[in-house]
Amino acid sequence: MPANLVKATGIEILWSNTAKTATFSGWNKSFSVQLGSSTGVLDGQKVPLGGTPYMSNKELYVPVKFIAAALEGGPVRWDPAKKTLLINHLHMYRSYSETFEGGVYSLSLDSGELYLTTKQNTKHQLATLGRGLDVTDFTFERTPAGLTLLRVSNVYGEPHVHAEYYTYLLKNGSVIRQGHTDTYTTFGAAAEWSEGKLVLNDGQTLRLIEDGTGAVSETIDLPQLMGASVTKDVYYNVEAVYKDVLLVRPLDTAILTIVNRTTGEQILLYKELLSAERQLEVEQIDYMFPEDHIKFTGREGNVFTFTVNYLDGSKGTVHTYTLPDRE
Image 1 (cartoon, one colour):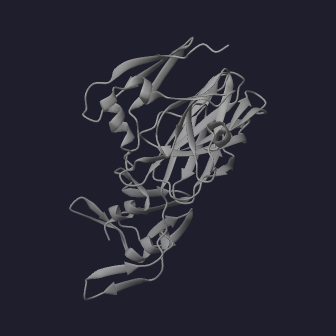
Image 2 (cartoon, rainbow, N blue to C red):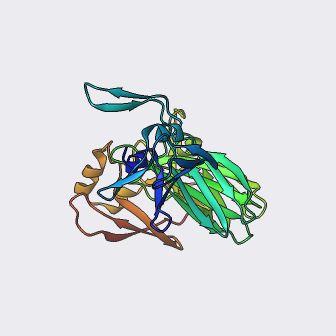
Image 3 (tube, rainbow, N blue to C red):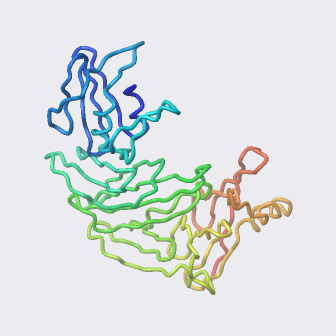
């Protein structure tokens, strides 16, 4: 069979023209073959291939039974009517990895297992994210107190409008705090810091975490603060955290809201920033791509700055909102 077909399982192929060898690698899986040799290497052990790899029209062909064994599949069967080879129970080996400060962080996109391999080449599991991972990315940050902040993003669904974020705070290579939010790609970025404290949100409970120790300094019940009468399945993306207010976007309405942390008073920003015509557009909720087209960009004193983009593709405009003084 053509060797390139294994790429569908998440396996990558590295070809050495000098050694005439193809090395296949994926999540906890490696094997290699050499042109003209009936012996290969599977997970570090020499094994018979049941045939000899060869090149045809610049494409590598490898014995099917060896590929089936390498991918932990069942017996190979031939369907003469369809002229098709059948192999059941082939495994997947999709993975994603990045290096930060000498450590390799690797993630199985199929099992959700997240590992750290240190500079000393020791490997240990950090967390399990769960199945259903699709388009992933890592962002790293060294905190002022010397901790590692890792955020794993996963964009999924069709047409990839859903986004979830796994946040891990690590000390000496071990997770001491973690959080998970599930939102939409149309939403603004979730807050990570608030006046020197790490922000962790699971959609209903917001925690402020001390840098260095990982201690929880404050916990906020978001449904209670928002005055939700039903808390089940009500989730909130928190896009900024200040001593006096939060910028909160409920997942059901996608409306960016300034919420007073003491009183729970809410300001729906689209009503303050948009024309009457644009307000009507926002109120027609698009459940496929929920958003109000308002993105928070910063605060100076009581003045909040936002960028507003529109469905018609017109250029984004800058708007400001001044928070009223409260005695």
